[in-house]
Image (cartoon, rainbow, N blue to C red; front, side, top):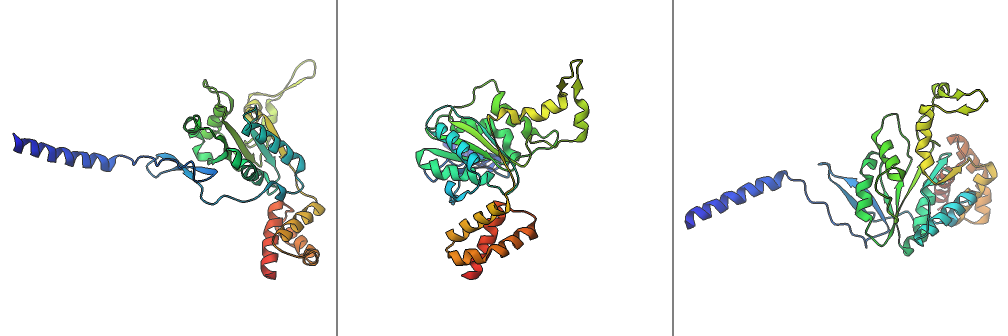
Length: 289
C-alpha cells in the first residue's frame, strides 16, 4: 500500500504542476500605503490589477494660471468629497493644453494628505469600472477614477459602461468614489451634420432633438459638474510663460527678454496653451542653464 500511495502522490503532484502552469497568476496585493495614485493595469492573460504609481506629478493648484473659475469649482467639489459631503462627478472639456488633466493631478496633491486617492483608467478598460468600484468600496480613503482624453466612436463598449457607472446601474454608486474625466469633445461622441436631420418641430414651433442627438448628450449629462476651458489670450499665455520661467529660476530680466521668443514658439505650434508655455519655459531655461 505504501508503494501505491507514494506513486499516487507523485502523479498527483505532477498533475498539479501542469494545472498551475496554465492557470493565470494571482493578482498582486494592492500596496495602499505606497502612494496616492494608482493605475488599473491588464496582464497579457487578461487579468487586471491595481498598480501603485511610484512617481506622481508634483503640479500644484497655484501653478495653474488663468483658469480661476474652473479651478475654484473643482477644488470646492473635491473638498466636499474628501470631507464626506455630497459631491458631483466632473467632466472637463474644451481647448487642448489648457490644464484639464493638470487640475485633477493638482487636486490629488492638494488633498492626498486628507485621504484622497486617484485611479487612472484607460478608455479600453472602462468596462471593468464595476470591478474597480467593488475593490475600493470598503476602503476608508476617497477615490477619484480619472479618465483622461476621453472620447468615443460609434458603438464602443466603454461608452455604455461609463454611462452605467455614472448613473444607471441597479446598484448604488459607492459614496467613496467619483469619476473625473477630461475630453476635447463636449458630448464625448463625434457630432455630424446628419444628426441635425433628426430634430423635429411641433405645431407650436418647439424644437425637439431626435434619438441620435439624445443618445450623444446622455453621457455628458450624467456628469453633475461641467467645466469648460477656452484658448488663452496672448497676455494670458505670456503670463503663464513668466510663471514657469520664474519657477525654473529665471530672473525678471531674463523673463522679459524671453517674450518675443515665447510668441514665436507659440506661433510655430499654432497654439497659445499652458502646455506650450511649459514646453517653451523648459527649453528656454535649459538653454540659459
